[in-house]
Each structure stands twice: as structure tokens, then as C-alpha cells.
Image (cartoon, rainbow, N blue to C red; front, side, top):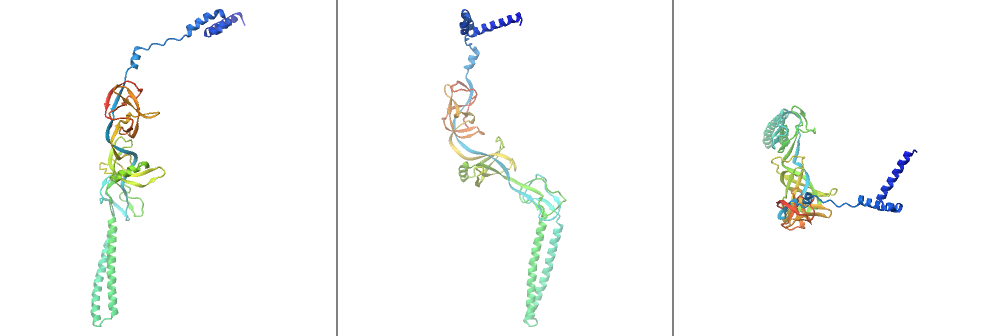
Length: 406
């Protein structure tokens, strides 16, 4: 190693030693007592605690500025209590219209999606074979009636001759039996006419109920027969219409009590619960609870005159089971959730917000209403908007005030 490199290494060692002595003055006091005071002064100058900076006047003013909030006063109302659930719309009745005779379709008399009434013509099957069978049965009846009339005349003649001993009793009995046989044949002819008329009537296919027809399943001109499973069209009765939904088994006592008092009101809404579609009444509670889910099936009926409900549609339902009298209510958005449970911010007369634990008897987020069981009194003001950053005891400025329930 050359002299220049040795000199550089020596200088680096001296500089490092001096820096460490400044960082740790006790080290300098042990090894270099003469340099210890200078090392201590350098240490104090570099590492002494700096006084805290004074906050700007604007920041101090911001820290003391009250939080802007909106409040609502608690109030007492008669509040309807609802049970919420999800359901599916079902047609009151659904019929697949099928042919009951064999033949060719001459006419389709409905349009797809049309509303029809019970008895309206849907399709016409070629009636000529059935009309011919009916005419044949009527002709046979006429023939048998003529034969019966002649047999009765012969019976009258045999009766007269038998009284004069010109005919035997056997001849009289034989003719009487023939008359009875022809009478029975007349009854069979009448039944055959009725059967032929029924077959002819079946060639005219009418709507069995009022409702909306779906897609056409068979086109005009096709041959259909009574044995095939494919129908001609389906009809769904949508006035009235039903909604089937479930409710927890724990709500069954309240539901039964409401049903015993009369048909409870029920609302059908869009699946997100935002839009009211129809209002109806509860009609059926199933006869058993589903043990796998712990729920009970219910059915409601809706007039559906405006066709707002459609078979197969998923809806949110709200069943009113009772009306809680003189209930203390607040907006549901005022309720906050913390590690110790539910609480609200109450604004006092000095415009300071304090936290207050509450117990809710019922909470309806969709209607933004909560029924308070414990923790608040009528007329107290709770914060509804402006919770973010709000601390207990903070000064607030009330921006708006509204009622406590709807």
C-alpha cells in the first residue's frame, strides 16, 4: 500500500473517531479527556431537543371551528310494524289448453300475449267428421223411434186378439218384450247423440278461464290428437295474482294474530325494495314450518288490475303485523354502531354532542325509521348527518332540523 493510501485511511479513521466522540461524549471522556468538553458541546448543539413549532393561526382556528351537523327531534307516533321478506309472483291459475279430439286445426283465434275471457274462442278443429257422426246418431234414433211406434201398434193388436183367444199369451209376451227392447234402444240412441254432440263441441276450443295467453304452441293447419302432451297455448290468470314468500318461524305468532284479526296488509315492491308495485292482503299461512330452513311459507293476493305484477317475478314483500301505539321514533340513519353496541349523538342546549347508548325495539332501514326502546326521551335532538369526525363533547353547528319519523 502506498503512502498516499495510508494517509487517506488515517484521516478517515480520525474523522470517524471524532464523529463518534461527538455522538457519544462519554467515549471521548475515557479515551481523550482533553477533547471531552469540546465533544460534549458539539453533541449538545447537534442533538438538543428543538422547541415545538407554533401552529399557524389558521390551523388553530380550524381546530376550534364547530362541526356542521343535521339533527332530528325524537317524536311519538303510531307506527306500523312490518315483516320483510322475499317472494315470487305466481299466477292465480295456470292452464295448458289441449285438444280433446283428433283433427286438423282450421283456425287459431287468439294473438300471442292477448288477454282473453272465459269462453272466448281459441282454436277451431275441423268439425265435419264430428258433425257427420252426430247426424248419423240422430238418423239412427229416428229409425228406432219408427220401429218402436210400429211395435207398439202390434202390441195393441196382440192384446185385442189375446182377449178374443185369437192369439196366444206367448205371442203377446214376445211383442211386449220387443217394445221394451226398442224403448231401451231409444235411450241408447239419445246417449249416442249426446256423445256425438260432446265430440262436436270439443272441436271448438274455448278459454277455460280469463287470463293472458302465452306463446302459440301449435300453428294453424297442423293435425292434433288428444293423446299428445303438447298443448295449443297456456293461459295464466293474473287478475287477481298471488305472491308466495317465507317468513322466520319466530314471527309466526305475530302473523297468526294479525291474520286472526283480519286479512293483514302486505306490500309488494321491486326486488331492491325501492318501488312500491302493489298492495294486497295475506290469505294463506302454510300448515307446517320447513324444518330445514326454520321458515314458514305464506301467500298473499293482489288485485293486479294494472298488471304491475307478473308471474315468476321476484319481489320484496312487507307484511304489516301490528301497529305500535305511541312509539318513540328517530331516523334510522341517526343510529351508529360501535364496539359497545348501538348509540346516537345527542345535541344538547349548549350545542355540544354527547354519545348516548340506545336499545331499538324495531329498525326499518327502508323507511328510515327506528323505534327506540331505551336511551332517549321525546323531543331530544339526535344527529342525522355529519357523524364523520364527530367526537363526544364536540361543539356543533346545527345546519338543518327535521322530524324524527315518518
